[in-house]
Length: 211
Image (cartoon, rainbow, N blue to C red; front, side):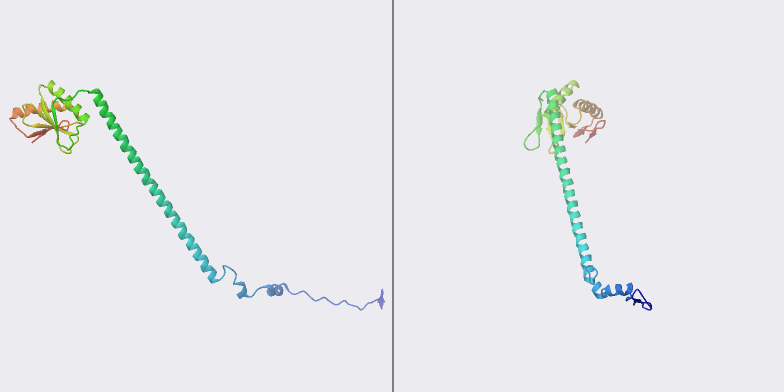
């Protein structure tokens, strides 16, 4: 029996079933050998990457070493500069102090000053010390005969007194007044003990050595 011009026993043919997804994906997958030859996945690519990282590490280490060297050089330069500046500052202060001593004590020594160093360059500070030494000795009723500046001893002076065989080692770092007092005290002690030493060292405050 036909309906609307059609056959009731007509059955449409089934369309061809789609391929399974797994079959499609399997067909789209590349062969293992072809897939593994991507960049960075081969043995050669991994070796190149490791070598590149090693080179970068070496370059970074060399760069850091250069930085450390520059820092050390800068620190040394700063230390040297500071040392020079400090030396200049100290020399200026010494010059100012000597100038002040000369200003406050304008007198000149009257006794002979014998310099055993080459050049016979007697500083103004030594001259002022000897001048004050003469005045202090006069107050103790002793007189300075002459003064010797020993070889390569900038701060030491050898003082010879009139009528004495021994000489006295003094230093310009201590006041002349206290050293004259020590010398006069030692003269009385030596005379009382009938001693005749070659010299008496009174450079250290509160102590005296004789030989």
